Image (cartoon, rainbow, N blue to C red):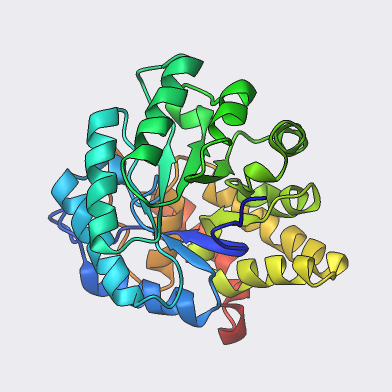
Length: 298
């Protein structure tokens, strides 16, 4: 059995930007402190929600370095190092290890549409290039490519591959993966709307977008489940669903950045080709967020 990197909730952090597109590290630091104070179990900088696809390698490494420093080993930092180029992903992974990351999250190569053999070779290269544990990230809706069950089964044999973020919209896939890979590939939900179904089928946690806004709620959902309070966990999942639906009504991270602006956290500056949420939709989103904004909810 492989020991999961963490149990519970990790937050796929947004990357705050200034109007000129430069990185707002002060706001990022406040977000990190908020997350840890709320009980978040791990942090993931430079994932999809962090707009890593629009970052230079230097910018990505600067965000990873800052997150590691600001976190100060209070929780694990799982750096997003995946790209659609294996050599570049290896380079970022090695640098992330040198900067003190605790593990990496690597998206399945996008646009290239590699074969199953290519996916296995890509992830094997990442797992071999450093001592950092690797989380696979399967999100076919964004990559145009899915990590097949046979590829997962092969990759689960590698001692450095310690888990999978599964974001294909299917709770049933958890049962199939666990049946094929057993406890050699711990599974994290990559869909906020499926946190509880994933846990109930044998998942070990979530890498969440909504927890940028409500980290304590998402952490408590997982905590209640692992503590045996299924009804309590189900209640939180149900309460969060209207907000989750709104956060994914258009391309992530457009809505979550708008929500963070509504909370007074950071303006919703995005890098093109992403554009801000229109004002009317932002106001409707804030109407969904505002009922949660008691201090103990955040």
